Image (cartoon, rainbow, N blue to C red; front, side, top):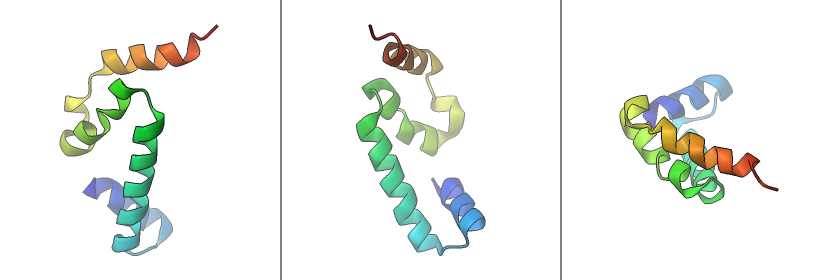
Length: 69
């Protein structure tokens, strides 16, 4: 998450403490809106990079979003 916070600081010029609050707020919002398999992997992605990301389950979860009839 530190990398994301630093990116927000660099792109916006806001302080690191405010950027941290903003990033945490957005991540929390995304976790409530995304399908459970995707939301559950947000922390893993931030902690360990893409190596901890299960693209198969994400693809299946997102596919379900667009396959509504």
